Image 1 (tube, helix red, strand yellow):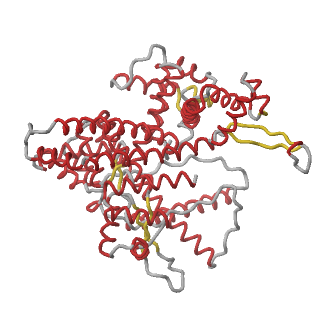
Image 2 (cartoon, rainbow, N blue to C red):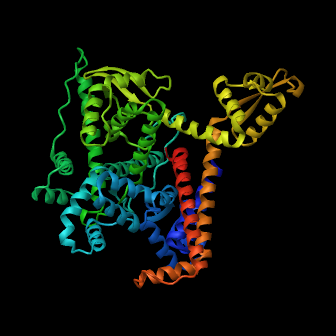
Image 3 (cartoon, rainbow, N blue to C red):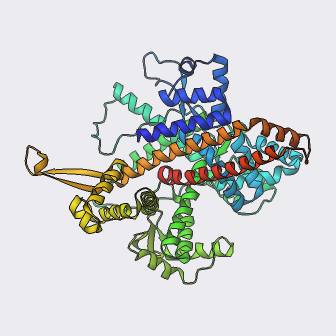
Length: 585
């Protein structure tokens, strides 16, 4: 995993240098090596002048490549330090630079060209307010901002409601809390007035502020919603916005009455009062955190990369099911993932929400009517039963609910099958059909000795031994020694081989990052080698000269550069697809 992070950081620095300059690259390289840093630490470590370091850091924060956190001591400390900011790199967002063209293509296919322009502006500018987005889109269309304001605003609301755009985190958030492992030993609750109790209270306040931001990530300002409703905007975006306004003033539903045993009424009343006091305290803390957040007049928005990767993950799952079963199963799987998408809290969810057959059927018909999915040949209930009874365990039956049979999608299982398919393809390319046969045999049987592997795989002993050690050196197999005596003598020890699925995935992930970095550097090398020719072509295009004279050698060089660039860009996109499978999904 450390090697994986090393190659990922190297690729991130190359991307930052290419897109934002050498100053930003030096800052990124320093904070990637040192971790969370203050501004004086960045100035000393990067060796840049203070003014230049501040400008480079602002550029990185503007483009969401570095996160700023406010550190402040608790008020209960005797002599608290003044608040100060620390800056942490966001490697995942740096690596998404390669995936930006795919983001724009996806949003164009799903929501149209207007949404594509908004996403393009936010990808190029980092974080902007809504007024700045309107002006930037109007500038690209060469129109007055007042003419496109209404249309851009409605599309922007749809993007926020679809979670493609989110609020940019303010610089007043505390550093992310480090959660303990669930198997760690729980400490006793601290006594009131002690230093440990003060630390626990400070940690709870940090979590309250983080919870508030997570709750407000996709919340539209009420002024924007009211303007859209007053102008009579129709459609799903306006309906969702109206529900959001209603949620802000509605009261929570009354709790159901619980049965109370005789003699326990006072205890239940005391517990209920304590729970009410705790809920009121949390609500007061949330209100205090909300007052400290930026107002809608200075609200900034950015692209939510997580939602794009979630859609790509769902698409990969649908393609896998279509490949393993049929297109009807893929269509039903797409409907199930669409219906459960609003209930996913993080990208790497193991399972989807529980869905009934009726809900899946309704979602399937809605997607078929809108032209998103082809009409399945069989009914939805039959297709779901076919997928559920498959040996791959793509979906699982949970039980009967109010609407009938309930099912969940095993997304982590589908992603494992996708990874296994890619690993097997790599093994086939490197070690041939015999190596793939050995790997599948060990996945099926577990641990086997060298002679057993040769007998089961029907291979000669010599070829089997060579393949085993080559695959073990590549990280695809692992060796286990089983001693028969306590002295662990080699002559009295069994040596078995097993498939190293997790290690092979980590090894392949690091190799993918290294290969993507090499391809990127090759593209830059080809462009720099023909820098004079490219500058000549750009100058002619800027002057509007459609037909300009080039020699035969220059034309041949230009065609070769175009062909090589297309091949390298296609290779980089394929590597990025595999990187997303082994690292993001």
